Picture 1 (tube, rainbow, N blue to C red):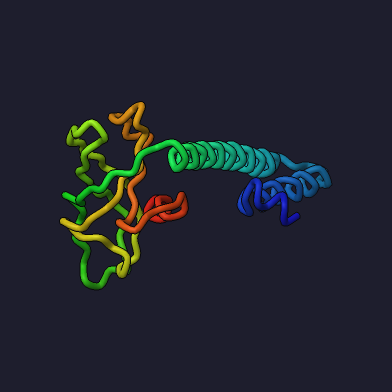
Picture 2 (spheres, rainbow, N blue to C red; picture 1 turned 90 degrees about the horizontal axis):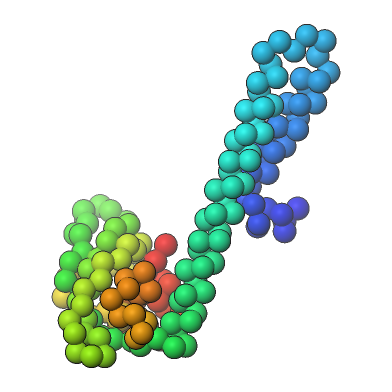
Length: 163
């Protein structure tokens, strides 16, 4: 059961079980009437959750495959954070976007805006240094860029700022 829940998620398993139980109850009734809609609805929700879960896992795996390739074959450039939202003093962190300016291997100034997640004590400020990992064959392709802290050297370091 633990292996299954890592693959499809606990919500999917919950709704699949609810659907099976609802079919069992509905089948045992002499006159179910409109109650047959309950197991159909639960099955539809379970199927939708399964589809969304599989899609999200494939997308995440694809992103991290690109990151793994870039760590081996990409270039790391020093950059400066030129824009990041300021947070309220009572906030525990930020889920938002930051913009980093860097120069690629050809000396061309580039800007990349990425979404990220930071706890208060890890939150960078405007003007702080950052590193940009990018594909030297496609330096303008922002989907193949990862931004990390100035001390980043591994895939885990670059993945730390990206949810």
